[in-house]
Each structure stands twice: as C-alpha cells, then as structure tokens.
Image (cartoon, rainbow, N blue to C red; front, side, top):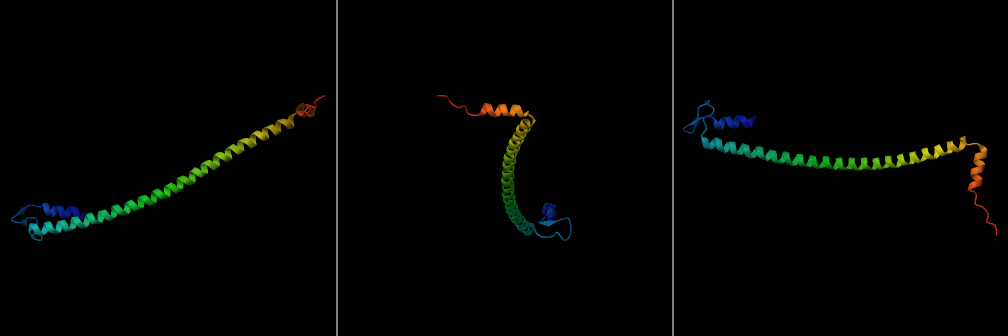
Amino acid sequence: MNRIILLLMITCSFSFGKCHVSSSCEKPLAEMSAEAQKFIDYSFGNLDSEIENTKEEYEKFNEELDKEIHVLKIQLEAEKLLSKKITRIEALTKKTVEFKDLDTSVLYNIIEATKPKEQTK
C-alpha cells in the first residue's frame, strides 16, 4: 500500500519541480526521487530477506517430506511382507483343513504312498 501511495506521489503532475496535488507535496523532484529510491532499496532488502526465509522454510519442508516418504516406503515394504506371510498362513491353514476333512483310510494310504520303499536285493 505504501508503495502505491509513494508511486502516486512521484507520478503526480509536477510543475517547476513542485507537485500540484497538495501543499504537503511541495518537495523538489530530486528530494522525492531520493526518498523513493531509499524506500525501494528498503523494500527490496525486505523482499530479499523474505525470499531467503521462504527458501529456508521450503528446504525444511522438503527434508520433513523426504523423511515421511522414507517412513512410508518402509511401511509399504512391511505391509508387503506381512501380506505374503498372511497368504502363506492362509494356504497352510487351507491345506490343514483339507487334511482334516479326509477320511482316515485315505490319510493312511497317503502316508504309505509317501514312505520310502525298501529296495530288494
């Protein structure tokens, strides 16, 4: 807002180095230009520090984001491993249930068929 007011003061119509807007605006053009330059230098100095602060905040945010991404990757890998183990447990459970449902004689035949056979000489 101050910049706009200052620019309006500078750009108001001058006649013989004086401003027609009001009696308070009777400084010579050179004086007003020097003040305007000081104001601009001050403003840009503030902008530079704001840019630096914003850059630092951005870098901190990126570091935190990288840490969160790393944690999420670890969690994803853990979930994948857990999913594999759950799938394996489900498969083993299903096989166990299948064996429980079999008749005893069928189980005996399976056991006998899987025994190593004695070789005859």
